[in-house]
Amino acid sequence: MSTCLMNVVAKEDQYLTDICVCKRYKISRSTLWRWIKTGHIPAPTRIGPRAVRWLLSELLSWEQSKPK
Image (cartoon, rainbow, N blue to C red):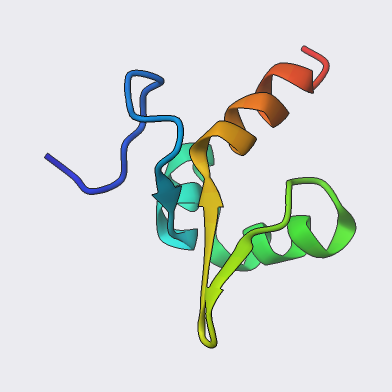
């Protein structure tokens, strides 16, 4: 099983890497960072000097708030 959880059954307090977020939305890393810069997707949380992660719960909330 991949370390990137793609379904909602995963723990909502789990942190996802940029690679996992890209796999979830089927986008490239450059697109992800462009979306962050333009405010299209929630910004990540800095968990260390060189590490950022997204909370799955924040992404799920964002997904639900997007117009269909």
